[in-house]
Length: 185
Image 1 (tube, helix red, strand yellow):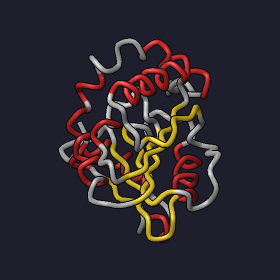
Image 2: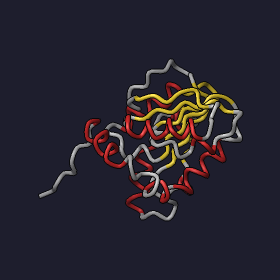
Image 3: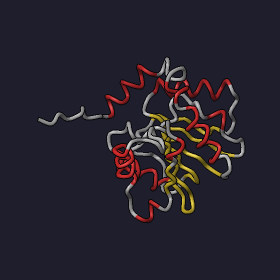
Image 4: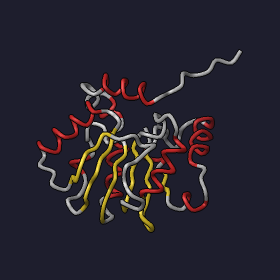
């Protein structure tokens, strides 16, 4: 008999991050620091408007260049409260807004951002394909979607296959998505 893994839903994700918010920076924040730092270094070479999907507690916000305009979204109000405190503490004038929002139903017009980044998000959303469509939709023509995931280049074959399957998209999207396998854990 094959056992099924529990179905992730928005309420479950929101509840999990409510519990993690108080200790996130000291736990997972430290573990995923290298991938986040690498992604931000790449983004800092770009210009324009950046959407960080799953901004969480705002760990990456102080690292973005002041020449970028940053918008962050997250499903967890508790995580966003911590991100807002970082914006105030670091006086981050380039952060245009932090919004409680579902990555699968972004409330932004088409082509709103020059760069869309989702760090450690795609493996925790209930509907990754729906989220990918939304990331593409809000990314401007000539823009870039950057994904940082939990799997590194040296992940086992099964994990690499799962990662590859999660990134299969139309040729148009594939040309705009920039997977960062070396930036994983």
